[in-house]
Image (cartoon, rainbow, N blue to C red; front, side, top):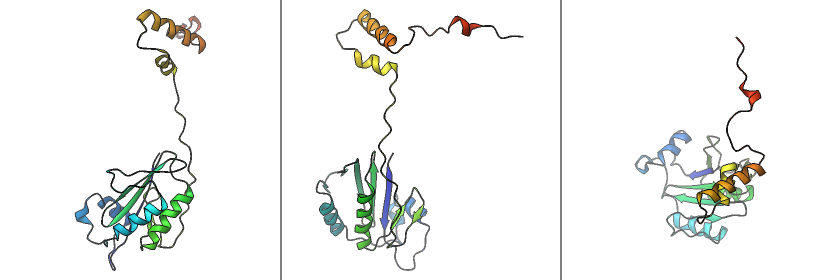
Amino acid sequence: MSYDILFWKQKRGFRAEPEVIYRDLLKPENLKGLQRLPVKQILGELKKLFSDFNQKERFPLVTTDTGSIEPGWSEKHFSFTSRPGGSNEHEMHMLVRLMQKFGCPLYDPQLNKRFKLHDSPPFRKAEPEEPEIRNLNDHVYDALSPDDDLAAAIRKMKQIEKQAGKRSTNRPNRADRSRPKR
């Protein structure tokens, strides 16, 4: 599950709900109430924080101990998407502090809350991705090779079903076939 955080700086006197601004970030022509940001300076600071950050990549990605962060930006905003496993609390707070230096408070769309400039948000701890639940078909697929003929594939499938304690047919047990009482 990803987690997004966004930053922008509003012009004096400009009033709009944060969720409206968040939605309008997809349409740059609607961002008249936001100030331009010193993008080059911010990108330079990001490079200092994350050595593998490359702003020239089409979709830059920063690798973290627990996952990755995908930065995005325009001349009026910065966004950071924490991907599976995501960033840890320390990394999220580093990003918040970086953007605070440039006068940009945090907006957390998951909470629909824009924090005050120097607030420290209560990020949740990064949680590992739930392990994939594998079913019998996954095990059969893993066991097959391109050289298997149909008979070999069926033998492997039956062997895996037996190991899994499954029956090779989908018919219910005789006890399950009782007629409903009228």
